[in-house]
Length: 118
Image (tube, rainbow, N blue to C red):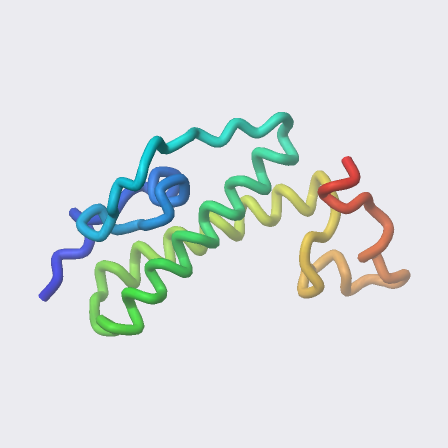
């Protein structure tokens, strides 16, 4: 069985490298840190980072669906992403159409500025 946990980058390191798995990472050049300019941009970066980690680990789980340890890591990352999403939406408004904020009347989707308008 593939020893998955020792081979994983932390989500940020995997995100900036484009691969969560150290053994599959091919260093193609200099890796640059992401430096968000404000809190909103920082939260969006975290959301991107966690979503990337979930997709990459999800692909692994497609091949190894019985890896309980990797499933636990996936679920932890998913929980962290959900916390960041909640914080973002609390401060800046709904980010997706399935946001809890959108279940109100009137429709809230177009009430706050889009992330690129701030």
